[in-house]
Figure 1 (cartoon, rainbow, N blue to C red):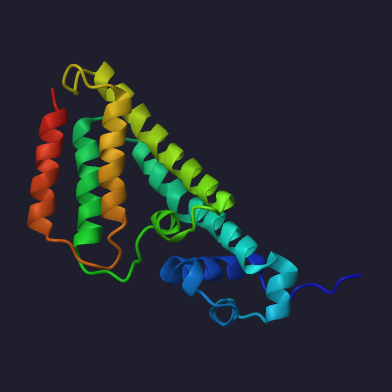
Figure 2: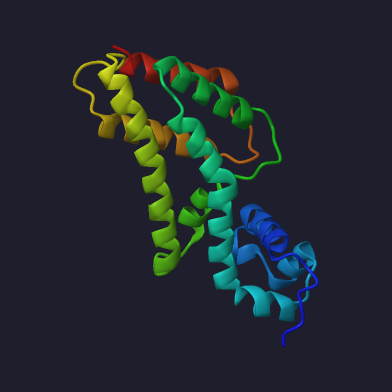
Length: 193
């Protein structure tokens, strides 16, 4: 009969997620991971598999802990003003110096080798979820007559998704608040009917 684990796997996985989120896959060493997780190398391999498998589980954890709550907020948007407020909040978080690293999914997309299909698939699924959430918002806004004629939910969703991804990829590097807010004003003026 296997011995019970002396650590909580969910807590350890959350700590591994933080390491990967901060350092990226390549820079996160097994020593970094075991130190943060508070477990030894054997426990890491026994519970989570190799580093690559742990990374995929950490991406799943990031989806549950970070992306899902963000998507809930996006899906709740009912007006263009609320969408603009959502972006103002993102700007507020990203333009002020912060210790939050850039989006873990963005980091995976940028730093993963193009041959690692499992990571690329994860990135694609995550992007599709964000796109679908924004597309649903724009379908509502178009029905309400808040979006200018000729703009489709698909087009608008891609436009704001790319803007959102750009803001989320900045990490702890502060952005020039006034210039970013001005650019968002232009974006929303272009969408508004």
